[in-house]
Image 1: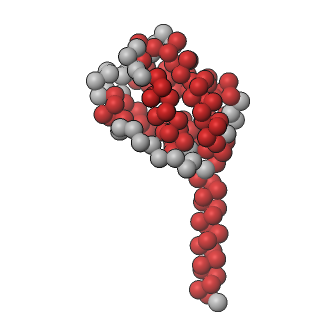
Image 2 (image 1 turned 135 degrees about the vertical axis):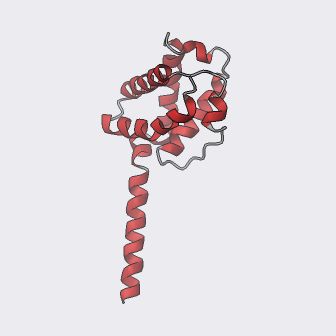
Image 3 (image 1 turned 180 degrees about the horizontal axis):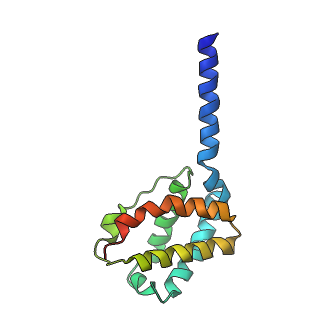
Length: 138
């Protein structure tokens, strides 16, 4: 009886964790919502005077795919990010803290446009924020 109770508690805890772990993914609207978010996000960053030059030579279709994968994976969705690590991708770009912050502001603008709840926005940004140490090189 004791063992069965322990297994039941483990299963309950695991399913509760699974539900919590994809809260951000669900709050973003799942894969469709993330695709819409990226679709709104890219024109914002490519028109932002503070950072648009960083995307002059970028393959925007590939960037959209990688951002969607990354947002999906980081938000707890069923995706795997298949791109390069952040340090490698940004090594030669000379990204500053100001540019990183501008991109984060632009992401929040895109999420506002999508009507994503502020709590979900904050959780996504908090999950992405640790990447700053790998992205900012200047």
